[in-house]
Image (spheres, one colour):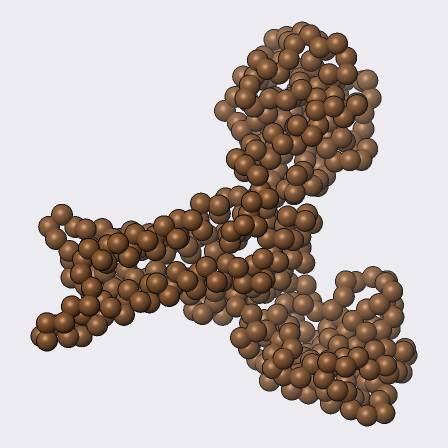
Length: 449
């Protein structure tokens, strides 16, 4: 998988028909193979788009010479009409001329192996492709631009400086040289830990942006759960009728709520029933609440609260939830104010209060405004967060050694913790990593990227 000596080819644009499609070649023979695929009056010039013909289409071929290409190798991109038949023919001809079909993510893997991207940036490529909200795309693009990499490099540079001074003190013990004392070491370690803590403090919010959240809508029959679901989704996805028990299974749809990608789940109305199918729907609804990141407990504001409402509110009290008083287009009998702070008054029919509900959902999930993520280096990846936490733990161990009640321990023990911290940071950016980890990361890429 990690050999870069051969030349690979793949369709770089999404499958299906389109106005244009791109076939990408990368490797030492990319230019010579491309010359056999297209009819040219003269060799391709790097960074110049050249009109040419293949045996089945008119194309535009563009060459990028190593190392100034996406992969760091010679690259040729052939833009053709977006017919799957035409694109597959170009790929087959390239394979016949000596290329190999690329594995998923192999172009980006070569960019990483050739130093064009570090591992954080490479992972951001996949995140940018998978982004479904503007906020997800913005966070991924920031990482691709190197925002997080720069912050980690600054922390690593501080660790390197501290390590060098401690090692210098060890190298000249008999000469009496002492390059840093315990007080300065503790101060330096504290400053570095603050930088790591700053990165980690928004990790949960960053993961929420990248991975999204599951939000379940719960309530009795006919309180407007499906209407609220459709209003938040922006489409008539769930069936809405005056008949109680219309929804008997989980209905799922993805929605963008204030920049957060939410998996919204409409559930069966909770009530006692002898209908076996409806009972199973109620059971699934309860299981969905327990697995959700947030539950919207919907009640009918135009009707007095009854024992079933009270039971549902009590049953979901241990969950992260928002009580939604629905049907405020009708004369309200009560207000959600009795459930403050996690409550909202809405009308799914008119749309009143929905913007406020979206704000409440966002606040319940991330505790604030996710738009501020752009102002800092967002940690959105669970792998990154775990490694940064490991580095922070090592720094704390080093600080405890320096500040031990009986006096600082030997510098060798402090250095061991500092080396552990640096190793964790190097795993984040890919300076130190295993083949198995690389296979895992790049296997989730699409072919052609």
